[in-house]
Image (tube, protein in one colour):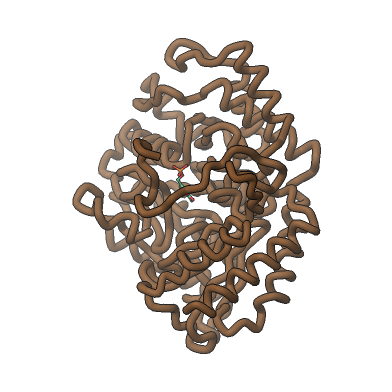
Length: 439
Ligand SMILES: Cc1ncc(COP(=O)(O)O)c(C=O)c1O
């Protein structure tokens, strides 16, 4: 591992050599149950032959044709299918979540410029959010540790509260009142900044990695949509983590009864078999650009035919095997199992999520919800204890306020069986016990 720059320099990574359903296999032959799909990517597990066959087929026919010269059948096919499923009108295909977020912001901005409203230049986002690692996407994000070293290169974010019930809805406040309060906060922020300067509001439909699987309360997005409409602000939904069936509908916004102006998906779009993401939008948003004749934006690998073929095959498998309804069922069973295993654990504060995007949040004390000090690195200890037991899960710190707090995110492949579900919870249980014994 001499030359490759890894995420951490102090870690000896095992070499992954194979996959078998929900398991990854390393060079020593160890099998790891993938309870987080990497980072909510591997929705079909690691040995889905139908997707592999589609990739082979497409690579044999045509590997690449640059999108400034040609279009291709798989890219057109994927666009058509995503449009049909989303109720939106136009799609751009990119290679990763951050790229798709960049495209969303640039499309939105170009819309305003082309409409003669170039004074609209501010994007409001939410605390405890993550929209990607590129400079533009980091500028939006409310994940403070990930921003910190690059702060001088970033725009100051305009942040409002996320919808984070466990930590931010007081006991005496109803969900309806909470949703109304959050929408009022957004409205006040738009007023404060100047409504003619605000271009868009960016939010994860179901919050993902930063605060750990935080679904919105009912009404929240309807109210947010109404505020955006009142001021003509674009509602841009980031479904890179929560979309593609992960939260029990192909697009997470389907459960919110709203239509966004722009939505971004990635991760599960080709189930990890190819790097691909998409930005979808409404005809009205693209209309001013169409008049101008072009979108001043592009990447070498956008609309890549092999990636598009893999995404089409992923959609086929989701449909043929009826996996999205299964997400709702397996998710509900997994929550029940987690409650049975951890419901009375002194250091488990909350078990939450939607579909198969779930999290367990750890606290020092359940009554006060006090998090562990950051330097105890509970999340890192848990990751290692889990991996030592052949379980891969996505642990994170900063859950409570960006600095303190720990959670484990569970986002297993949709094909998880009942037996594997039991194995997941048993291994996680052992890992949690070992984490707190050592502490
Ligand atoms: C909600 C959300 N948006 C954007 C991104 C960035 O995607 P990528 O890492 O593919 O660039 C992520 C990645 O974790 C994410 O969870």
